[in-house]
Image (cartoon, rainbow, N blue to C red; front, side, top):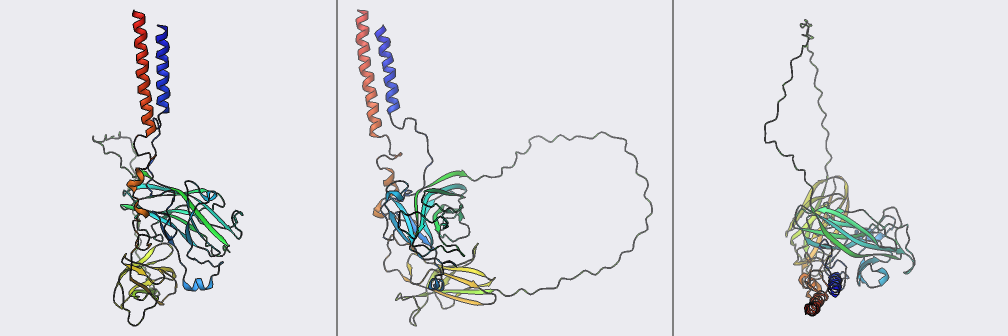
Length: 443
């Protein structure tokens, strides 16, 4: 009988050890990361952006680029690339590098993600930056402002400059990884997430030989539906009416005759009308630049279907579509301000001129802008203009990635099956031993 108790205890101990060793037996549930390629892993496209991510940037006018006064501030197209130096990687085997030499820039990468309207989403990523006249690993100049921010467009338009884009707080992570985040509530069936860095600071000399930022380890998770004001439940029974008790209230004295004061006629002041100064007018058109030389030659006509947006620092103030005729589309009555005019091309077209134009508008002045484009010769998946829902490089899909080895959603692993098999074998062996011992004792 003593041997029976010993064997029973060993069996319980073995079962406990095997259950503990089976991986994932008590793993806590985690929120689903909705991003594709959240670690900015390879492969990278020909333009230097990680697969499933698209590039975006801000451009200055030709006059600003000709002057290039760093103190006044200007924006130059940076370079994107795959970073494989382990000292500049937060997780995985690569990070997204964006940078430039000497010239300041405002740029990043973006991705469209399916969403549920009314649901709040939280977007986070890690960033690291370096601004210096010396080669890495010399330390970064901590006086520089990097303007690293996370952004979410609730309607998923993919246009970083729209006024409804929600931006998080800015950070300057010199020589260290720092997490930035933002939350926003979706208004459509998809949202756009943005990583951003902005080296431009008006009035400050920000130019350095090396101006670089790295993005890595991004995450987008649903936080739940937006909070709503729920009205209190209506009563199902009539309210109780409290009738006040009568009290002895003194009777007021009778009214006395007060002589009436005759009314006097007071003229009503009239407002003096003031003339509102006329606003400025911006007219925009698109021409068919067949030879791609950036100017409209005499034999070149106009292009239809090009969307124009006119925006100031806070909102889009005008939007129209070109008609394909020589008559431009105009926005009138614009107050003095700095405006950015942008053309947005359909996938069949490619630009032959700059996509942006910045204007300092004065009262009563007309302004005319013409953008050039032509029919795309060859549409490629890496085209920034045509990409709305990016196609992974190499044909890999979300389904492919979710079925890879070691994925949390890939089913029971081989190690788990082996552990279960060991448990079954041990139970069978111990059962056989117990059977033999019991027969000896009864015999």
